[in-house]
Length: 388
Image (cartoon, rainbow, N blue to C red; front, top):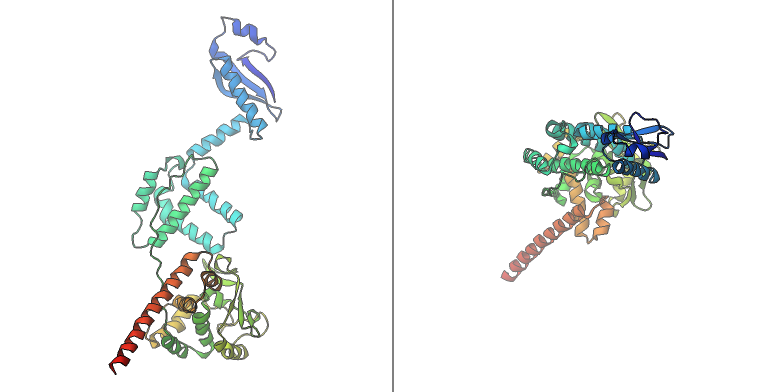
């Protein structure tokens, strides 16, 4: 950096500064700071200074930026600062989302959900506000206007907003994150598991080519998208295992085949009593070839959850006497059965493909509740025996 610590406005670079400083005819407000930057161009301070020491201090700060490799032309920095000061939440988030997708490798469904939260919940109230104008009070007022009947959606939208502002703090656009509330986590509903009698009725009411799907759902606790994408090559009959490495989803009308939720690639052992049913299904209903679908539609494609539910599952659950049973409740059934068998927390997380302990703990608690009901029933048996 080549600096002429201060020059007088209107004077040439070679003017003797000491003599000018002592000249009573030169006004103090004419002191100008300028230097030759790393780009070999001359850069001026944003204005003149009233004292030589102030100009020298500004040049010292510029030199420090150069030494720290943080320098940019002052005019460029002023333009960026002006943009940062006027940037709205919408303009920042519209850049943040594609950058986040590239850096974190967000899945299409996650990106679609984030965009939906932005468009429906965040932008209408906060989108046109400048980042610097959003305060903790603003955020609290926004939370207060969210639909109280959708607590989980509210929680996800707030978490997204908080993450966006955390990045803004990292980008040095803000000093602190205005999202400082601790939203109460909504109660995690776990559907009532199907009993073994209900499961038998459910299986019997399904078309023969789909009965194994119900059995595997209940005993192996896979997600629907994981079932729909299972291939013949994913089944290991010798070891009694199914490899779960993909899931199919439809995002904004487009079919997406990707890794399972939470990247939960895993191997799940199916109970030995299902071995013959698996063999028969492979022999009779699965597509041929290593990549043949295990549960193809009549058109040879993967099932979509709404179609499967409407065409088959709704009728079967009515026949089983469980009109409110969801397909995902079969996963709850399998998880609860696994917990009741004595599976550890780590084993449950592996089998279910969970990345956090909270859901697995819920199943353990459910299994404990079932055990208490069993104990009560055993006492009833004992009382009846004593009476006899």
